[in-house]
Image (tube, rainbow over all chains, first blue to last red; front, side):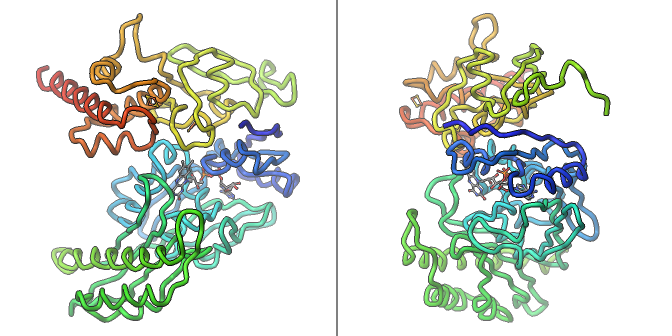
Length: 294
Length: 173
Ligand SMILES: Cc1cc2nc3c(=O)[nH]c(=O)nc-3n(C[C@H](O)[C@H](O)[C@H](O)COP(=O)(O)OP(=O)(O)OC[C@H]3O[C@@H](n4cnc5c(N)ncnc54)[C@H](O)[C@@H]3O)c2cc1C
Ligand code: FES
Ligand code: FES
């Protein structure tokens, strides 16, 4: 099907975009990469009167990697971040997650911020940003505010954004030294939204024990789900096979995941246990590297 | 910003765009809700770009914009203003198939052919980034497009043949 008619605006300055958004209110939709929005327009699930295309706002097209961390503007495509060797080195977990987002052809258009604003509960990037402790920078005609990733996602397809606000940037703080990470997921077909995904981070201490472990799952709940009970089990351990078995069992016993057309709650629970265990064993693989030459 | 008079909207829901399609640059007046795919097919008249699903799942509509493969059903024509677009019609030169198309033909990489232009454009963009040496790389390169006929084996063979011959040319020169 084809999109219903809309009035098209294509500002080149951020202030112009915010002003337009303020005037048009909830009669307008922001068009970023269009990889989620345009399918909905074509299906006519949405038919906004106005479309505000932010692809020509040059200020939003920038990203920077500094001593403080990574800043990604709303115009930056997923593929740009995926292809940066410096970002792959600094945030391997982000790179791994990106290679699992849809297909190259989609990532060539889709933006990082668009995926976060869209807030699909099965998407990879929201859980990675929660694990990384990222901050969302949100602008409107009246000012700027920052929201922690952990508080930004409200429900499936619902974020903290108000209609007149633009998520202009996401900030990812620099990771502590010796941080190891992994992203794991189970998908039916390559490029599909995953049944379950897990972003994991942690640090090996001098005694060979994992500390500050973060485990955040996608696809399990309406928002990225931080498995604090599982983090408590693994922190301070050597992630021995026995620990991994215990965590996997505890994940399966504790969760009550979403049921949908893709799979049952029961199967998803089993898959979550497996995905978490696999992610943790990838952290084990990196123990030597983290305590070695670096 | 100076307003270019020729570009001022004659009709509210239309805009002028200037695009380079397979090397030739032209201006078009497009309806704003027109998808890039429908623009290429119906306004430019290049019917080689196919539409399967119109929501981003199948890849039949893949074209190359400024060197990147994208779904033309998920872009509006108006968004392509100023860009360079390559479609399957740009691959053959004077009726002579490109080497990748030759390999497709030789390896039975198509049956009904509906998906073929999308696969070719995805692969052309991918092969510009570097060779595809293994079957798993070939399958990865194919993974963003769907074919309902071939079972993909012919395409894998065509890609590997193609990549080997590009390598061969480079090594011998
Ligand atoms: C076939 C297919 C497979 C896919 N598979 C996956 C997958 O496996 N995993 C995955 O995570 N995603 C997947 N996606 C979705 C894809 O990642 C989208 O690119 C992403 O979800 C949206 O980013 P976008 O820039 O395209 O945003 P758009 O589609 O332009 O916008 C999405 C929504 O966010 C709003 N929005 C966008 N940017 C902003 C902003 N800066 N501020 C405020 N609001 C904004 C829009 O108004 C809209 O409501 C898939 C898509 C397709 C078509
Ligand atoms: S027609 Fe565009 S992806 Fe199917
Ligand atoms: S050849 Fe028929 S769909 Fe691919």
